[in-house]
Image (cartoon, rainbow, N blue to C red; front, side):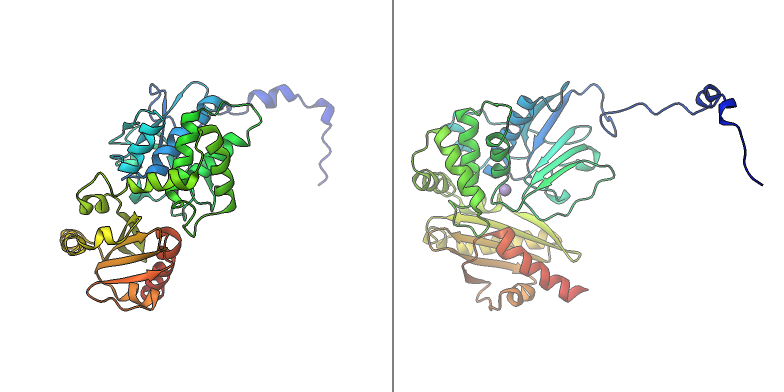
Length: 349
Ligand SMILES: [Mn+2]
């Protein structure tokens, strides 16, 4: 049968009114808390200078760009700031961001991490609007969101580029530039880490002009020195930096401490080993690794506890009395995690 309906006789108005009502256009997928007009930019737990500095910078950027018109964008932190961060905040005269202890019913932009295990508590009860960072991706979310990661040395580099490459004539204050610069120097270990890219160096140099920092080496050295000096208890400093990783279903914790001279740590290594054993006994870690990284020598003394065979396999080195020196290993994320993860995957598949 041939369909020969005369289109001219079709009353389109009738068709139109029978359509179901259109869904209201919404800016975002869910509104957990309509009253809460705040968006929090937050780094990982046990925040380092990148997590705090980049959060302050990104909140400043989003505010100036008026990205979220009706809401204020606020930098917060997911834990106590370390000595390096304190030094940078004081140097550039910036208030320490408020502590956020629970993400429940909050709108968040995650910075400098994406793995849930590293996020502020109650992350599963938060609305995540975006992610910005420079880490491997272990993230899933049931809605489309902004997600930007770049293989650069710090999150602050990405934020710095957003300011420096912007066409809207944003004002990049001395304090924001200084904090972003500090975060780049901290995360790249004054450009010595293997994660360092040309973009990090260029961005740092441009930021240094705005922040009135004449020598990146001298300023970076002062900053890095703060990581050890000012805290008598190395154990405390070290355990402030544990990051948990899921390795083929096993829980692995890796902490890192950068120092200008490894000798500073030697006297406390036995104490650190005892602490690692205690921590292992009290939780369900398969392996705990501590990297004591000598930024001048460019290498790390590794101290481990738990199931260490995969660690030994990953680096082709036997641990002696639970430790060994790995030449050239500077970055947790680039030099240590990938080969270790490979060994876990190969072993447990
Ligand atoms: Mn970082």
